[in-house]
Amino acid sequence: MTFDPETTTLLIAGPVRIHPRVLRAMSMSSLNHRGDYFHGVVQEIRELLPVLFGAKGHQVILTGSGTSGLEAMYSALVPTSGRTLVIANGNFGDRTNEIVRRCSTQVTTVSAPWGQPLPLDAAKAELAKGDVKAVCVVHNETSVGLANDLAALAPAIRDSGALFLVDGISAVAGIPVPIEAWGIDAVVAGSQKGLAAPAGLALVHLSDRARAALHGGTYYLDLAKHLKSLEKNDTPWTPAVPLFLALREALLLLKEEGLAHRLDRTHRLAEATRHAVDALGLELYPDRRYASDTVTAVKNPAGMGDPELRKVLEREYNVLVQGGQGSLTGKIFRIGHMGIADWPDLLVTFAALERTLARAGRAPPAGAAVKAIVERMP
Ligand code: PLP
Image (cartoon, rainbow, N blue to C red; front, side, top):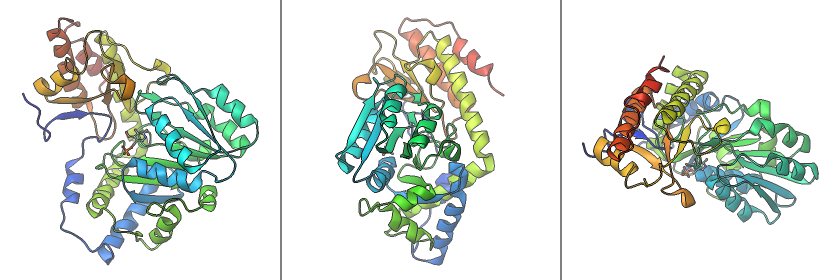
């Protein structure tokens, strides 16, 4: 078997596999984005977005990848005067830090080494000083397969009165993000993750308080301008029309499945993945208590880097999993199991992993990983 992008078993950490209905929805000739048909599409998307976020609020669709949503959120909500707290423990936490530092000169960053739980005590100590105006944090740290314990942080943020700004790009529609219960003021989702739409759109949810606090930001991504246009089912600039059509269909699929069902299915796939990793004698990268349900990060076996592991999976079995980022390149691999990923994807991936390890002389117990999955299938 050779790698074939059209038929590959795709379990990277996003973009995830796209349903044929979503693919078909995109295949349309150019539309007049200022015409009634497209305004109807935008209206339907607006009506469906609360399904994605599990909450009503002020919700924006931006043409641009997830990072555009982060830039929109931070540039308009990080206060121009007053202290902002960034809490980081991975590659995307570091990215948040970089963006936020372009928006303010009064930034305090508390961080833990990549893959370690958030430094909650240090964060709470900063909040207790009483002058923090905004807190910026990644919910699901995709780079290390770790779901941050925002439930433990939320009460301290609420008590401080600071704005609670969240990168939910690989969390939304993958793990529970109780926006209202935690008092989140703004959260960004990416189209290519739990929602299983194509890459290239960012979705931003704002609370009433966040909407009132918007203070401009960048020109193209000005959230207030986008909200004003959306009230008329319009967009300020030419949107990525095919992606909007795909987004509508992906949201309809999510509505048909139900958000709670998608979260539960993602959780069960993640549990099965973790047990299959154990069965192969491999080790999770992050502390198991915080292992993410959307992305499982696994330590590479000693002596096996990307050429021996991921490249063999790709070349011999047409299976794609993701490598590590930055200093973790060649040291971990990551299996994404969000969106419309399903049991057959896990069965194929773990069968291929077992054979790859066996060919490298590691001989994991035959069939054990597949058995671990089969036993957890509904
Ligand atoms: N933040 C998190 C948590 C992510 O997982 C990603 C992408 O994987 C990003 C930010 C960046 O998103 P994008 O690559 O869509 O700009």
